[in-house]
Image 1 (cartoon, rainbow, N blue to C red):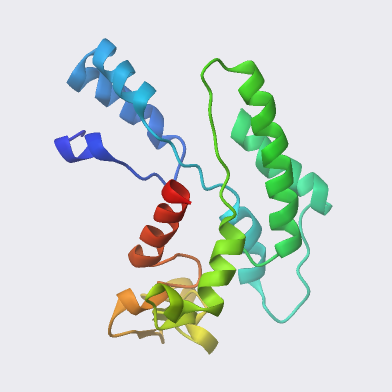
Image 2: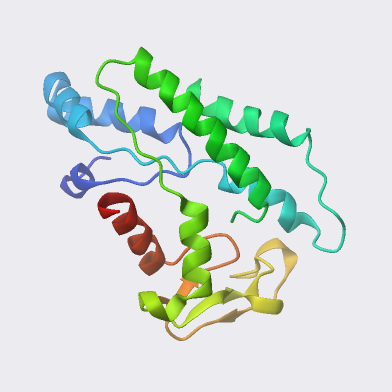
Length: 195
């Protein structure tokens, strides 16, 4: 259910959740006010990270085989837009395809404005120089097992019961093998908003 706090921001891990929120906003605010609120909102789409990162988590001892040729895979992921990044080549292909798609949308949709942030470059910078941005650890995750706590086992996930948790999550760039900490997410949000 929509609360007052939700009027200031929401985060979805699934695009389908947005449909339900629109319905709840119309019920709470009325159709006209909900439309005004949504038309003034800032939308951030972070797409492809799981699509590109998941194949690398399945088995780190063998070469990664994508389900399609690289360009076809990127077309598939970016095509989803209109209807833990490890593979830098995939990230670059994705960003190029996304940029072209957004340029087309801008021509088609009145009032549509967008900006693209180089999340991959920003993430690499943060990982290489964490202390420059107020972090102590840019390589290892706060929670997980194995080297760099990177086996995505935080909380005993994926049948791996042994894992460690850091003492101060705010000192880390990554919470687990895939997700940034709240502090890192705030860093990225400030970069996106302010440049």
